[in-house]
Structures are given as structure tokens and as C-alpha cells.
Amino acid sequence: MTRFPFFASLVALLCAAFFLIPLAATINFSLRMKRGEISLEAYRWVFQDDTFVSVLGFSAAASLAAILLGALLVVPTAYWVQLKLPAMRPVTEFLSLMPLIIPPVVLVFGYVRIYGTSSILPLTMSDAGTNLLLIIGYTVLSLPYMYRAVDNGMSAIDVATLTEAAESLGASRLRTIATVIFPNVRSAIMSGAFLTFSISLGEFVITSLLNRPAFGPYLVQMGQDYAYQPAALAIMAFAFTWACMALMDLFATRRPGQGLLPFLRRKNA
View: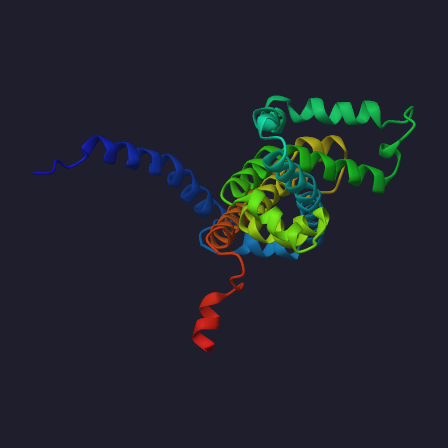
């Protein structure tokens, strides 16, 4: 007779309560903006704020740029280590974890020190240069997650055989990476991309110290000035992050060459 896993169930319930009760309380509070009734007034106020749209658009654009830069750096690096330098894999893994060891505040003060007014490359003296530093900062912060996802994707395929097959057909090394390796690790790149997006969208330290008009500082400022709107913003950010996770799971389970919406294809066939 199988015994009921009482202790494991109790731990699972406590963990679920630790996560769900604060979330439910935040949702309930965000719906109490109008005294004595439940309404979506706080959400309506947030959507009508022009600043919200501008900071969310800025953060989304910077996050997408960080994803592109991260993919261009990580995929060729992981490919080369997997193909030519397998002994260096522990070293690259350790280096990819450095952003988890170095606090973001140290990173951004290093940027200001190196690229400040007295530098030969004063990026902090212009909006475009500061935005570039912000994108690089986002890329560095998400490097552990992007590298881990791409490295796992590389380990799941036979990189050496695919490279030999492509080169035997006359493909250059760059074309091999672009047309053979990239499609085969696409789901891994997408996993890293969504993690990068989720991390960058709400990032506060680097964004605030570089004085960029992004979503993280906006959320903190709203928390200082208002009561109900920050709760609505927190719930919206939470929902957006879970949507990213759902998309990550969708892309991670797709096979190379499979369509974006295979269930629609089967239905229309």
C-alpha cells in the first residue's frame, strides 16, 4: 500500500502559499483604488499615462538590442569552444558566471569611470553613447543565462558532424554558423532571449545610475508617489514575465524547421 506523501505535500503547500498569498494580496489591493468598490481604475490610470508607454517602449527596445548583441557574442563563442576548444569549456562557463559575482553597481561605476568625460571614448556625454552602455550592461547581466542556454543547445547537437557536412558542400565557416548552427540551436537561443528580456525589462541599478528613462526606475518612482498604481504595474510586469516564460517553453519544445504555429498548420491542412 502506497503511503500518502504527507510531508512532501505540506512543503509544496507552504511553498505555494508563500508565493500565491502575496500575489493575491497585491491583486486585491490594485483593485481597491475606488473607495468601497472593486474596479480596474489603477490599470486604466497606468495605461493612460504617456510616460508608461514611453518607458516601456524604451526598455523593450533596449532589451531587444541586448538580446541581439548577446546572441551575436555567445553563439559563435559557444560554437567555437564546442568545436575547437572543448578543454576551455570550464573556463568559459566560469567567465560567463562573473556577472553573478560582480554587483551591477560596480559594473556601472566602472563604465562611468572608463567612458566618462576624461576618456578617449566619452560615451556618457551623449544619449546615444549612454544607451549603448545600457545595452552592453544588459548583455553582461544576462550573459550567464544566455550562455548556459546556448551551451546546452550546442551540447544537444553534433556540432563537428554538422560542420564537416556543411564544409564538404562548400559552405564557409560564417555561412555554416548562420545557416546550419543557428537553426539547430534556435530554441536554445530563444530560451536565452526571453530570459534576457525578462531581466532587462525591470532592471533598475544600471538604468538608474546611467539616468535612462526606462521601466525599472519608473516603477520605483511610482512606488514613491502613488499607492495603487505601483501594485497594478507590479501585476502587469508579473503577467508579462509569465507570458515570456510561456513563449520560452513554446519555442524550447519546437523542433528545427517546425512552423511558428504548427497546430494552425495541422488544422488548415
